[in-house]
Length: 497
Image (cartoon, rainbow, N blue to C red; front, side):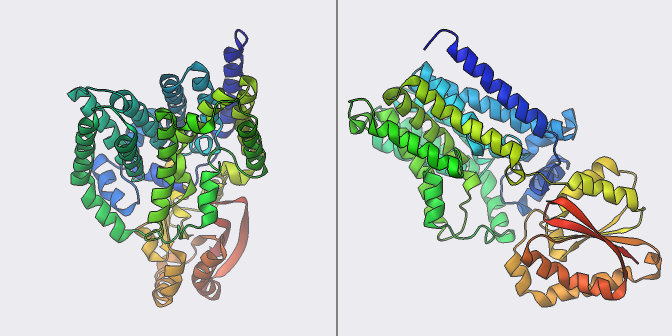
């Protein structure tokens, strides 16, 4: 390549990312992000205790706790943590690509990772997935450096690798599939004498994590539900295997066609000979394993979500970029790696569903400007976390009587099982009747009630049980539509008690 070409491309890359992040980092938080922030706002003991009502381990919430204590809870401050993990991941992918292959592959992999829609979208979410992607990449680098070809492995290497994998397990349970893929790769492909050392590291990791996390996991499994995930389909699997984590929509078809063209017009070296190279085949093997294992498990218990496949991203990125560097013109390879970034940026700026634009901050301002201390706020579905976050920021001196409907959402504000709730109609009717009785006491006379309402059809079926009773008992003053929608609601109903 010409002199300075890497620097020019890197400058273009930084410019695009800075442009997008500067325009999007301050957008309103949404329900999942708000749940993270509300949990991180608690003390360390409470975080560990309340994590039992979640589906994930608590490490990210603990890190976010100390981050927000130091930098505050502005949208820019809280999202900058995920951005930090994202940019560190890009560098880690670069280092890994350079170690396994060469400098060109390292640059290609950094661009493709950064432009992948799954890494890009997680980079602006106050959730654990950017940290998860970083830990997977770091663990993969240590695996190849310490074990794959090493004849001797020191105790320090074993402990350091175990520590990184323990951190991964304390971030998300899907990290277990990374450990399994490493174990299978080592067992099948590695010709070094480091298998006992790797096995010892795996035992240390799984043993420590089981001792600390297994009791929490069993409580989470008993309290939480994964039925909202649903059983996977072949279409889901094909989507995960065919580049959905890189780019999506019609652009994915174009990208796959261009990639297929490289395969058809590749240089003369046998593709099979190339695939049999240990590093190459190991990356491909781990990519398939980290998707297929959770996919198959999901037929017993649904756990498969495409956003979790960020654990597979480093493997497919490194495999593809090494392949492109080997068989394609380098300029065309760079185009194929920048193409997803261009599409991702375009979608992010033009598609509100992609960038997850919600108006919870505006909705909170609407309530604050119209409600007085003592007024009643009713949350339906899982609309409460985001509004509670903004109440804490902007209305600390105000007291509102907050009610979640149905009551069981008080126990798990971050998720709900719509079909199961509808099957318990008698309990929901009792909750609605109890709320009407409660706010009919004389002390509430003259106050206002604000109800977050509307979203998906099944949510309205639940919410309407209470709304019908409210309409009969009190005066509906107005309906305030929320442009673009809030987190699981699209309008606010105002009642006079």
